[in-house]
Length: 156
Image 1 (tube, rainbow, N blue to C red):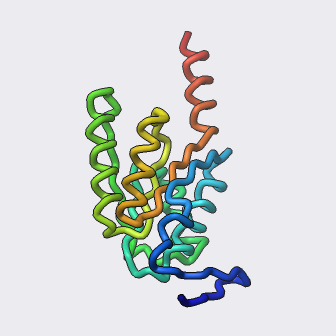
Image 2 (image 1 turned 90 degrees about the vertical axis):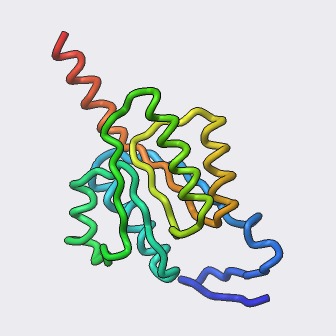
């Protein structure tokens, strides 16, 4: 058993029981692009030491640009994938792709932006994350929902 101190937080690494003590999936709502960029930066900094990829799925481009400019994040370890088509049939494919990435464990973290999942799907993602020991973050920018709602009201 080894003990590591990170930012005054003691972490006990017991190789037989590590996966049960980690929160493999986290769901977070943010209110604007600045908060989203801060979340992106926080996650990247958390996983910087692992020397693995951080995968962004459907990231907000403005927040990614802020990462490099204001948070001094090494973008060479960041991968981005955009699923432009949001048809219901493609959401299943997206879920399967996310599960596959999580299970393989090639990334230290997978960040999914502005996607909605049913409770059962979230449980599947969490199980895949635990299996591959890859943290999964589901981030939703609530400001986007409000602007879409406002646009819909203006159009009618």
